[in-house]
Image (cartoon, rainbow, N blue to C red; front, side, top):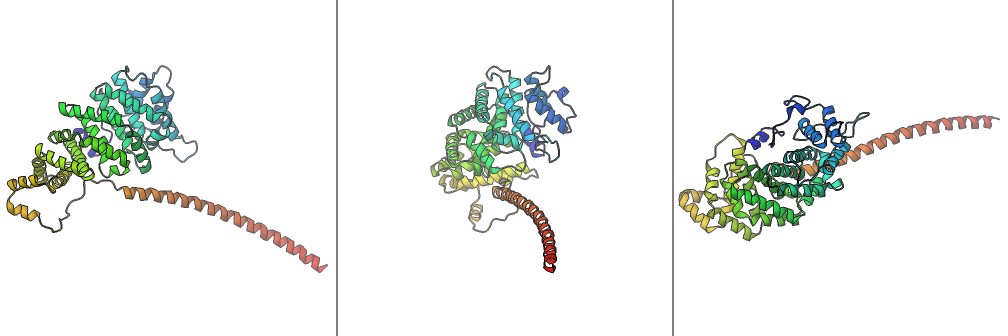
Length: 423
């Protein structure tokens, strides 16, 4: 909850580490971002280490000097002798996957540093697209994450899953929905990997341990299954993953008792997707489990009596209201329970067909994919128009020069013809 609250307050750089930050390696104060030259040098040192450095030291210095939310100077500037940032990022990723060492014996702190460095690189637009364009990157990341999860260390698992989430959902501005779709298709293509991830998640929930890892897996599932992020998920992969998660329904209901609001919200979003997008039998089963696990009275209390100015509480209230509506639809046992809880007059009032007053904003659907697609198409059209405009300007200059030349020659030839006629 502390991590989610800090990020919701506008601090995207906050994260959890297994060891304190080595402040002696940072070339600047912590409350200010590093200069562009420091970022570029730290990125270059991943590829070519200075004398006396090993690769682990280069990675730790990169993490100390680059923000967790990604490189601040990740695009090539339009001026003479500008560095090609995209090429530097691609080279840095290639170095990380080629010099990673033995993933089964490497020290845990070094492995965590590698995941944090990858997370910083893929948070940029160039690094995000490298997942499908850079040869060998996708396979290396798959093996790296699989071996990391087998080490059964919560810190390593959290770092690995957080890096995967950065590949699922772009962390940069002006992103491409098509690239997001390609990344998701690659990450969700292995059913064996998904089964292993969900089994690990189930074990942690049952043991009531690893809250950060549980929250990370919920984020991964949210980016795959929940609207509006699910609109870029392949239909077949969506159905397969939804069925796997629905088969672990009781595990999901356990999370409604978790003390962290972040985890309760993630579980509620996934439950909403299961009922709305799943088969009718799956929805009916979730309605029965809502009664059996005692989730309905808890969310009814949240939906009716939450009063707060905190956006996180209001988001959970909106989600609880939606879930109560889904769990009570066409369910006789649930309506019997409602009759025992609520006065008959209030239940009759709830049957009203009047329009519900819309006095609040939608806090769940925070991204408009159609608007993003239209803006991207507009930018592409503007680029075409700009190129056409430059072509027309060049043609205009050439036409003027041609006209001047023709006029000059015509005048010369006309003067000569006049003199011949006079002779």
